[in-house]
Length: 315
Image 1: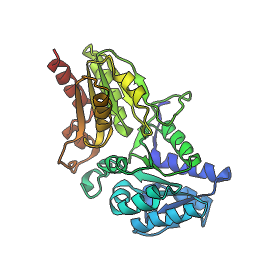
Image 2: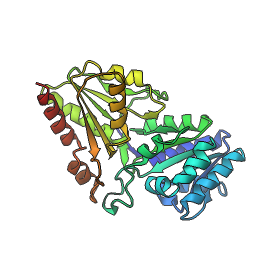
Image 3: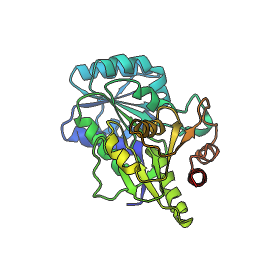
């Protein structure tokens, strides 16, 4: 499969199919119908969509109420506003009370580009990893996204799904099966491991191809399931490599880089790690996607540069 698809479109199609098969699903938006690309759902099921206006705290509270009333409530709005403005409601109404709400963080990372830090979501994973009782996923491809959503709608309890704001190419064939907790080893190599989540998985796939041209054999690991995470499986994939580079469109603290560091440290595994992302104490620059990733060295070329430097430092 090679066609690109917007993950919000995948989300809406999954919602339509769920209602068609009898799931009592109610999407809740915060004046975010365009962001959520929810129009096909609204046309198909008039009256089933709840729009609370620009009121993210109300969005989460309303979703919690719907869930308590027996509905499968799904929130669909931009990740920076969902996580920042409704932080306490997510913590208390959703996580602490274990309500059956599925939170979709749309246009995550630096998807909004030139709109800058107010619209960037580079701390959503770190925030939610600090909350108890919520599963956290970051799909890297349309097929994986659909399988994660289908799982989330069946799972009873809070879920956060981080979705990129751009169309993503397919990485998997039809045989792929998402399993909560499992990592996804896309390529096995002997020299170093590249680890990423969400859309930056595509950068490490491209970087591995470039590294191969320099006779550097890289393992490529996607972590779609942040919580739960099979850390033993992740550790096994990292062991045997000379170095590890993690890549994320997220602050280097609290995301996939921190997860990798925790796994290595707790196992007493002395493999050098370089975390690439938005540096500690910084915000992502206000620019288009390509310029942002190049500046923060989380594009394929930046990954290659850092991987080679890290390997050379071990010689």
